[in-house]
Image (cartoon, rainbow, N blue to C red):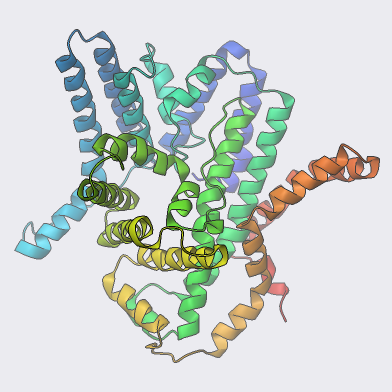
Length: 473
């Protein structure tokens, strides 16, 4: 079950919110826990046992750390946590990848087991590890109640696509939260923005990208040069709008029930460097690797050789986290190279416009590496983008698709910037000084969530329906 499905919107979420706000406040955490476990079990009940088992292990290890009498006992408990959780993650996410590479090199084993990846395992694994590490560091107290830690690890708002929520962010909110009407309104509004972003913009971009960049080397080989570039442009829009939409919806649903999750995206395509991009993109993941890998390795406060090592270790792991395939590792190391170039060569020498263009180009080609797990397909696309395309330079299909989706491109560009946020702020400031502006602001605030929800539901009901196709030259 995903957030952008009619079953989730009109059955699961509706029932959950109705029950949550109708029951006595003493039972709201129980409602939230039951809802989260049902949501998680929807994708495979057997994986619910895995989630509960990982949480139980983390709960026990944290208590052992807190009650340990010696530094050795504390460290042993921390090592045990990492071995258990990373071991489970390794089996489910990376065993097939590892055995596939061994088979390619040595011819064994004959059969590679097909292991289904449990939903959200990467997210809740990192959350639980961060919890135990923070207990080890003395930054938080161990949670004495297992079911409250299970509530934290299973919160359905963020268990499938993030953000990676740290326990210390929500520890007090688990025990005491009091959502106001303003919180509920903001949560609904934020959820509807994310839903429309996903259902209307991201899904439409995915449809165009899949048309221009079909699966399979044979299909890709017949595309034109402009087709590759346009297809990757839509993929670039899709991946940001998709990921950030899920974070919007998670933040919105959390706010509806009193949780205040931290922002996960901050208009990354406005970045003026790769370093700036990773301060804006998937902020919770970048923060995790910074605080739990990069800084413990020595960060930047070490010699140049160790600094380079630290960067490559972090970005190798960042690539691995995104998927069990060599292209993701290459993608991570690709960004490591540019971060080092910015540190030692480029520095701050580029003017702002050139810096922004440079960052967009680097990120654009990064998404090419990210999209194609098959290196044969990757080679075809990269060669085609630089003039060696089987379909020539351009064609009628590409021209037609561009014209059909010109308004989609415009809306996506706007959605990738803070223009809407700035206009909203300007209207809010004007409403404090002018009655007419106040009326416009009030009507806009009331209508916007409803309009976005209706448009999103219409798009979901129509599945492949693309509303922008009717706005063309």
